[in-house]
Image (cartoon, rainbow, N blue to C red; front, side, top):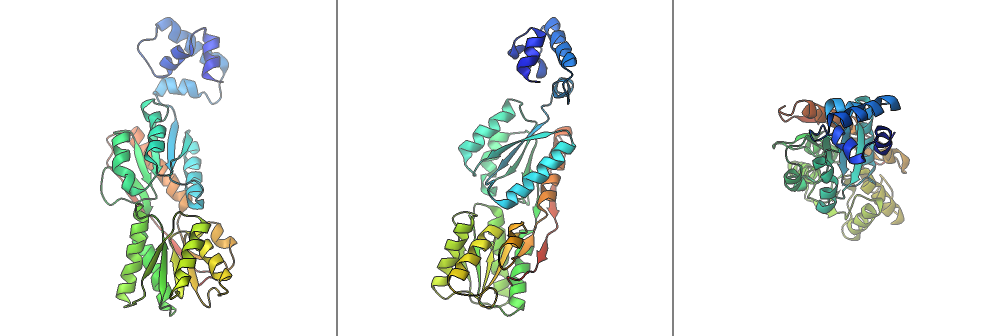
Amino acid sequence: MSIQKIAQLAGVSVATVSRVLNNSDSVKAKNRERVLQAIKESNYQPNLLARQLRTARSYMILVMVSNIANPFCGEVVKGIEEEAEKNGYRILLCNSGSDLERSRSGLSLLSGKIVDGIITMDAFSKLPELSALIGSAPWVQCAEYADSGTVSCVGINDVDASQHVVSQLADVGRKRIALINHDLSYKYARLRERGYKSVLHLRCLDYQVVEYASDLSSSAGMAAMKKLLADNPPDAVFAVSDTLAAGALRAIEQAGLRVPQDIAVVGFDGTELSEMVSPPLSTIEQPSRDIGRKAVNLLLNKIDNPDAPTERVMMDWRYVARAST
C-alpha cells in the first residue's frame, strides 16, 4: 500500500497524508481521522504507516558505504540488514565512494525524516565533514574504529591484527616482507601500516617497502604487486584486503614465481574470496556480519536514548592460515 493509495482512500492529498505521518499540527482533525481510517481499512501488513503515526519514526536506516563492490563491505551490509529487519527496520543503501557531494545527497534523507539514523563506513578523515552534515542525528561509524570523539563506532584492533600477520611471516623466516596498502585517508590503512612497520622495527628487518593500491580491487593489487616485483622483490607480501591479495597472487603467477615457495601472501578481511583463489589465502578474518549487527544495536540504542553516551566496541579477529603461507 502506497502513500498515494492511502490519500485516495481518505479523499485527501498526498501532502496531507505526509503531514499526518510526520505528526504535523497543521492537519485538521477531520482529515487526520480520515487518514487513520484509511490506514485501518487498507489492512496494510506490516502496518508501517500506522506505526509511523504512533511513533513519529520512519523505521528506516541510511547505510553509507565507501565501496559496495568490496566483498567485506557487502558482508557488513548483510549483517546490518539482518539485524535491522529483526528489529522492524529497513535499510536504504548509499554507495558514497567517500565523495562528499554524494554523501551530502544521501544525508538529505535525515533532514526529511525519511530515515531515523545513519550507519557510515566512510574514511575516518571524512568524519569531521560528515559530522557537520549529520549534526545531532543518531549515527554510528562502522569498521573504522575511533579512539575518541562523539560518534559511536565498532571495529577491530587493526594494529594488533597487522602485527600478528607480520610476526607470523617473520617467524617462518621471511626477511623481505612488503605491504600492499590502500588510501591513507582511511584510518584502518594507517593503523595496519603502523602495525607492519612496528614489527619490522622490533625484528630489526631492514627491508621495508609499502606499495599503495589505487583502490581495493584485484586489478589494483595486481598492479601494486608488479611494482614490487620490478626491483628487489619481497619474499612475503601482506595486503590490507583479500581483493588486493588476490591480485597479488595473479601477478606472482604471471611472473613465473611460486606461492608460497618464492613469495608468501597474506590478505585481510576473511571474505569468501580468500578460499576461492589458488592457492587458498591466509588472511585476518574479521567478524564482518557481527560488526554490522553490532552497529545496528548501537544505532537503535542511540535512537531510543538520544542522550546515551558514546560507545566504542572492539570486536575479535582471528588469523586463518592457508596454503599461501
